[in-house]
Image (cartoon, rainbow, N blue to C red; front, side, top):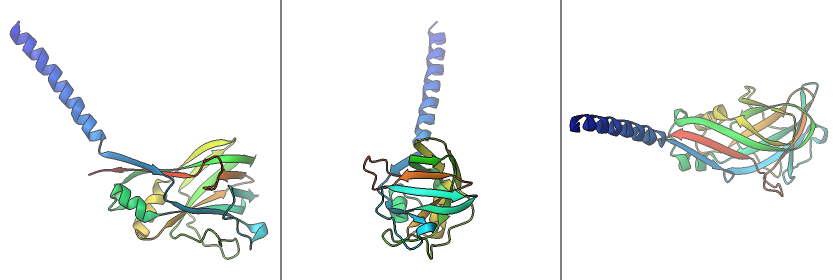
Length: 203
């Protein structure tokens, strides 16, 4: 009977050790989320191409017949992101999510996420002479009501790390069809600021 008990005990012990190993493995995945790396944000308006909206609480994105007439621009500190997660290459990034709050939905529809490999000046960016962002779509959300939405920003972050580790990068939100949505900016009075969450493998 003692031998049978010992076998059962050893079996349970082995199972517990296996679970512990799995739990330790899970700790290798590191997540980091902060609005502190958001340096600035603004929207630009084709109908007011020389006006700046860098201090507004809302970031408007709007299109007419699939032609963008308002775009939201957000730029982030790549150096702080890399230092916080000890990132050495784009391969270290498992996933990234850009979380934004839709506070005003005039017309529901799709909004795309695009990458731009530099920052910009929040207090001077305007439609006239606006930078050319990457045409590749990194993420899409369907906005149909007010609330929080999440873009898959994995490719955006990987591009930032690959193309410039010592300069900021921008995320550009572009509406499709006839969508028109106002997202909360970092100046939002209720604190619904855009947030970037990045998960890496800690090796």
